[in-house]
Length: 92
Image (tube, rainbow, N blue to C red; front, side, top):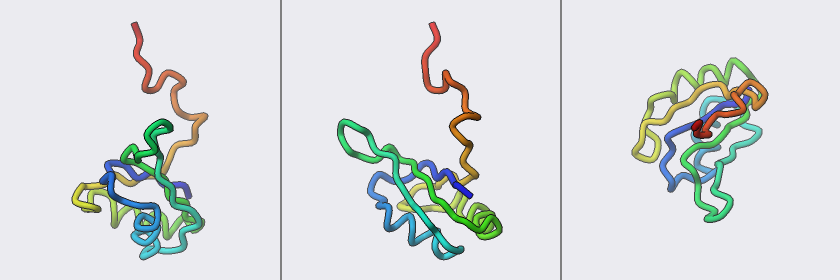
């Protein structure tokens, strides 16, 4: 299951993210989204956990918990095709 992790502190690293989620099961990938120009994190990322029951436990345990001094948002990530094509764009 691919998990979205939002409201992350900008100081969190991918290794720290992997370590936190590894407490609840196997993590195959942990990645932070970065700004393409500055290289700084945007405050969210994704964690891939192959076992859905472990991922559900991680969601329940970590959603709303403090990580790096901020309450994080953890839920199942939506696939890109399910998102609106205009998401994040201004309409005039």
